Length: 256
Image (cartoon, rainbow, N blue to C red; front, side):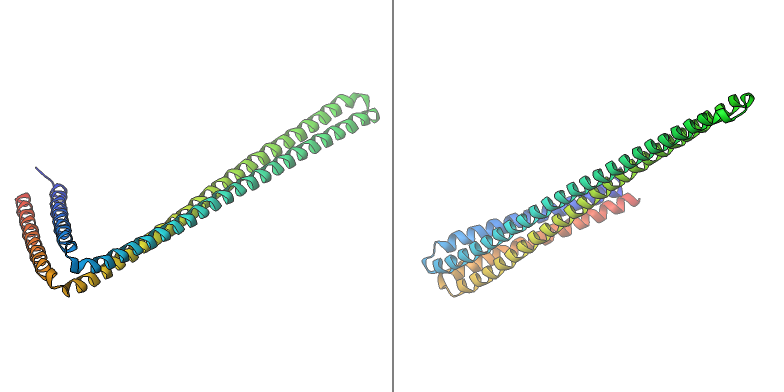
């Protein structure tokens, strides 16, 4: 049993096929019309003008596309360069932070060692019965200071790595955003060029039709072409109506 989604998809495909058939028939009819009209000496000048206008429009589009492509390429390259600069900066900051953490640990360990040496040297002023306890206290203090320096060092390195990863992620996100903006600008430029070509083509076709109307030998051909186009559109409309009727029957059967 087909689902509503299946029926809708099938209906959409039928309409797409009807539209494709219509466009093919119109294109074929137009091509046959142009072949016959181009054989007329009286219409040669009109078609030369038409061809030149289309050629100019296509050349403008190609130039615009090439310019848009160059701008996009430059924007993408610039985005990569900025990402590389951000990577280098993040690496430099991490190395500086790591070096500072290592230097801070070294100084803390040296200070702990100096304090321990001083404490041991002062043992000669401590009563002999208390020297072992004082030495143990000095050793314990040294170890605690060394452990604290190590923990601070490890925490600083972890923070440095975390900041580095954050900077790398931000650089990648920025590059993706800049790349998307470059692609969007490129596609907008391409669409604008395509729209300009369509507009120029429509204008050229309208001018061609007006020029051909002034050619007596072309009028019968144009009249036959319009009649064929009208028949194609009527058949298309009937096919679409039949498709909608079929879809309604299928929906009705699905509800039963």
